[in-house]
Length: 185
Image (cartoon, rainbow, N blue to C red; front, top):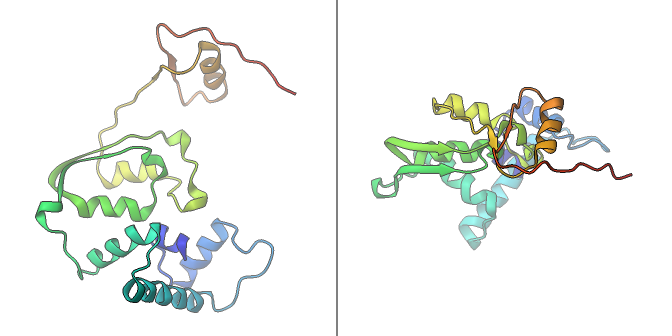
């Protein structure tokens, strides 16, 4: 259910649910129940009951509920809560729910800045969009500005990266130290 919320997977669409299960190897050691969509709908119902009757929400609810209520036109975002400028750091690790929420929070003509590295998308296991970098570029029609100079690593480290992954093409800062790489057995 948590993955369904983060990825905005339609729990009534059996193909979408089974695709999510397969993608995340969820029932690798035992078979999934035949009625998984019904089970997910019951979990969702209980999740919403806990929210509305007990005021209990978790982290993903804080995004999922507003996104769905706005999408379904049950809620509107007051103009004073819309933003002219939105900055998203680690954008490569955003999930679909987070990406959609940004659309609902920006004013017309707003500037959105997404900082990310498509080579560092590592949170797919928790529902992040593994292709978030490209998804965001397409969704928001972003202009891309590369930051090819690395101010953290020594030259030997960057040479190692560039020799292994030529598509990254990262440069050492002019005053970068040489660095030292050691193999630890």
